[in-house]
Image 1 (tube, rainbow, N blue to C red):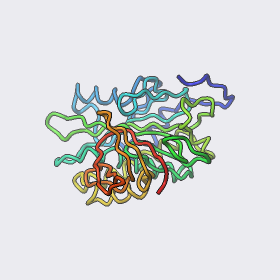
Image 2: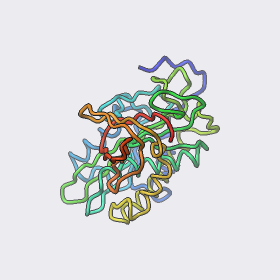
Image 3: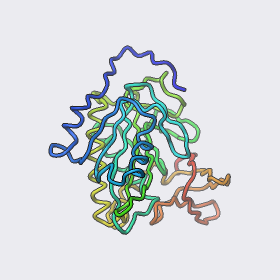
Image 4: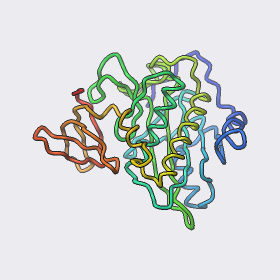
Amino acid sequence: MMAAMTSHRERPPLDAPLVRSLLQEPAGPLARVEVVAATGSTNADVAAALRADPDAWPDRSVLVADHQVAGRGRAGRSWETPAGTALTCTFVLYAPPAGPSLGWLPLVAGLGAVHALRATAGVAAALKWPNDLLVPADDEVPGWGAFRKVGGILTELVPRAGGPAAVVVGVGVNVLQEADELPVPWATSLALAGARHVDRLGMLTALVDALDAVGRRWREAGGDAVASGLAGEVAEVCATLGTRVAVDEPGGAVVEGVASRLDDDGALVVTGDDGAERRVLAGDVRHLRAV
């Protein structure tokens, strides 16, 4: 659980009509924008709505929670933040008919988030394979190196009867937390990372624009991250590549070596000390040291 909030800063709720006026057509890029005061998980809400009604959330839409009280991370982990401090939202994009490579979904979404963080917060954001958003730190934490986690991506593909599947992209970004509001030593916020004059509304607007831009490119290429050029851009912002890593796979095996590249399906390729390559499709990556 988070420490009790001690900041005296004002943390006003998001202005739902303003958010909608900025992001929804015709002024904004999205077909539907909804803001709720609180919910358990925006991803869970959107996925459940789509399973009940395949047209509940149109292509290029977003659900924003002013406060997410039961957020989920990868592998079912919880993700909790004090009210008014984090940006939590779920973006919906319809997949191309051919279907996407699932391994690229969190990475392409992460690329959009990195673009938004760099442009709006002025921080040197990066990706940690497969779905963490990082910012540089002055010291090292085991498993994270000289980085701290500032956010994460959670993606899900929801089939739709009679139409293309919906790609549900959940994004959580720590914006205003102070040090005593962070749950673990490897977490941080944009405020603690040195961002100035950044609020949740500005970050949301930048994030939607960036996700819409990469989403269009991805879909125009038929869901092919390599053909679209997005795969190369992901590699450029992925701090995991070129780092010695240990990957804890779901079955308990540990893969150690240098994270040398991303495969065509988004898998992480780890080169062992014997020169053999091992493809990793899922797992927790620990950054050991740069090579």
